[in-house]
Image (cartoon, rainbow, N blue to C red; front, side):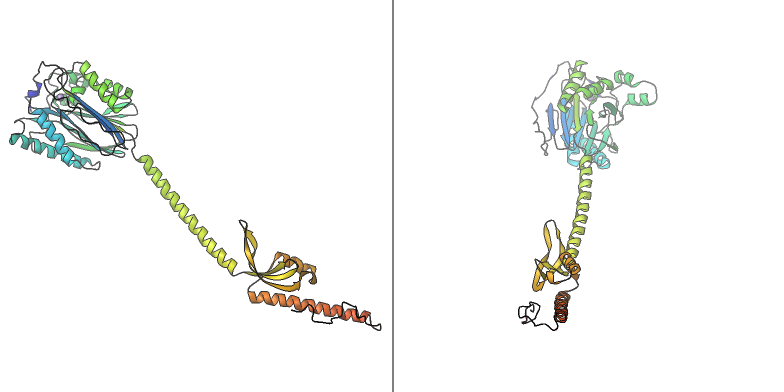
Length: 426
Ligand code: MN
């Protein structure tokens, strides 16, 4: 690829071709429309995770635009066609179309590289079958962004940059003659930008069936800005200018507009294409939130389980508990325990009796007011029966004492101590 027909310069100025306005996606829409081909000049769109804009311009010198771009979230690409009119733009259009059809839905750089290699085959076949012209070719710089991962596949001298924390880093290595000179230490990057052989590329789609794509995956995070461009940008302005414009442009649309405008201001010698993608949500916060919610749900389930088990145990305990206690002035049998929980009594009156509290010793009365726990309803009955027997024996004893003290005197009919009926019985 030593002779490059797209170097031919036309003097027609700033021709916009078909000037068809590409559809502009509404922000937040998750079904972005694709624009591939040189007809579209600008396009923007967004998903919940990404926001992007793309702009291509024929420049101020060339007669037609051979660049193509792809903005089909999560896949974005720039392709710079070569081969002259009715060839370069065909090659780049075939490339982005085949990449769109073959790009993985996940950020898998191996599959993304394979998509670029499929595009290479399609461009070669296109030339052979009369689509475009023999000798046509193109570059391809492609990214696929999924949450906090970005897969990159790349061939040629278009570029992918990452703006992270205000600093611009070039992610791709140009497959060009001047880049080899830079790598060899013979010229500087700035000298390469204006070198007479700057457009000689050493790897491209459309000539070698065994061509392979560079591919790798890097981490991206919220706030990162990804810039893809053809050499019509990077040969016209320095990386430091790209960085300054990228940092100061609020939106992807402003960034592509300002970058293309800067390339034109420097002379617009080549077609210039820029795609800017902002990472609005890398899914990391969501991931943390999901982990937190999962842990919270697990902890809640455990606590609820323990509470439920305690409730069952407590209920069983209360249902199997009995006590004898005071019910006003009399003694009664209670089911449950003599306590309240959250204003709810844990006992129920089961059975009353005629046993008077006041007939019992003080200590017993105190115990009864607190509740005398028994192991069963039968034991409760037996306890009350024992109280009754105790009272009767106490009364009998009192009677005996009274009889003794009144021995020899007339028994009064009015003496209340005399048991004359079965009063106090059941
Ligand atoms: Mn170019």
